[in-house]
Length: 374
Image (cartoon, rainbow, N blue to C red; front, side, top):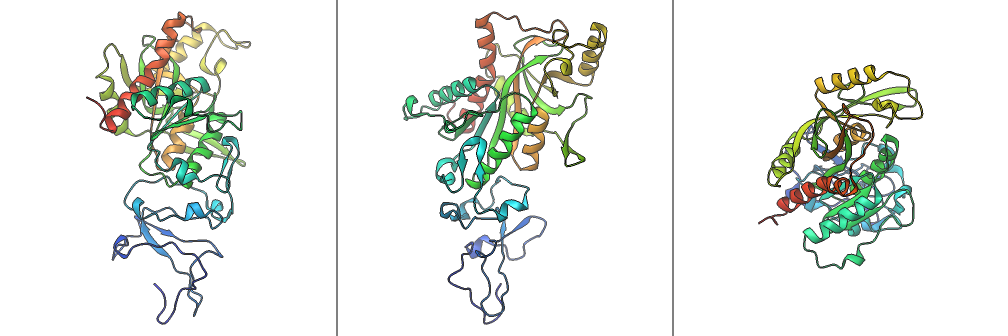
């Protein structure tokens, strides 16, 4: 509160909150102090005291440089919003999401993305476009399909499509590629005031000890040592982050899978590697420094540790989403059993049908969440 006899400088901007939105005795453990950086903070004209508004679960900074981003956040009080864990973002007049061809000055991000509730990411640009068109039909939206354009068309790094409350984005292959995309996607959701967002990675994988075509819902992403961790090298330090995913979301997805006929699904660990060939114990790469026996021993130990499939993005996906307050899941179909072979040799029509299985499950999940199921 202001000191007695003090007034706010009318020329300075301030986050405005209704009195009823601010608890009488807020608990500092569940509150976030929301303030505006100079010169946009509200200060007491008599004593220079900076005024802070304590608002439950409200984001921390509204850039003074983007009027569209200074909208009232009262509707977000009490809801789960997207965190960013970087105080330096507060000091930036503009945030350029370079690899998405978006920015806080060049685009009205709240108007473009503020209604997003479901984000689906996958490696293939074509597959994510197909998913967006599929969701458009499933949701029965009036917008013409030809109006669903690639929002990131100005760059060739990723593609992005929006249909209703669903955002579909490609992330390429491997941890570095998806990591870059996630940094900018999470900032995008934060700048757009998105709340109660569910994010799901859908894709393909290699199975271990399970039949091709099985859909694996990840409970925990593990590294190549079967440990539930993501190790990020930051400067000259190794920072270890948790890779647990939302258990309630995994169970909800599993229950949705039971409603789809002939749809083999299980919940299990997913191993994330840095490489498709040697890193996954394949014998068919340009390099191979181990025997068939060592390969099989390794994969059998992975199975014993609870691993049911292998891919190359889940650990960083789980770690980043968890740190930023996003409910996240990984849903991948298996294209082969790595205990039997290394190469994918499915007929084309079977391969296409398998690749569509995660999309079908997520469609059923989203429609159920939106109350559109019969």
